[in-house]
Image 1: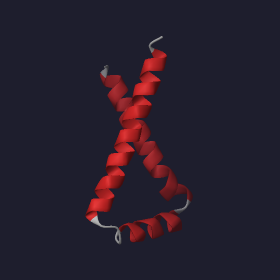
Image 2: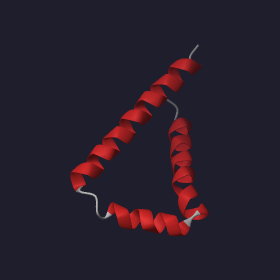
Image 3: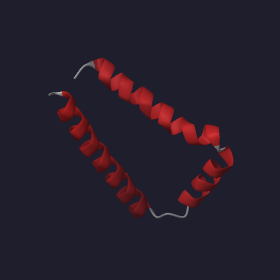
Length: 67
């Protein structure tokens, strides 16, 4: 893995994280208020699922680009 890959991934994450508050700040604020109602275990489970989906997607993309 090259360092540029890591920094590219971080840059893309920041871009995607900024899309919703930029396009619809009111909805983003409401979403954050709703997240306060979610328990820590539910939030952890959501994070685990998102990480697993990301890892699978990364594996699929990387294996497809190697050929």
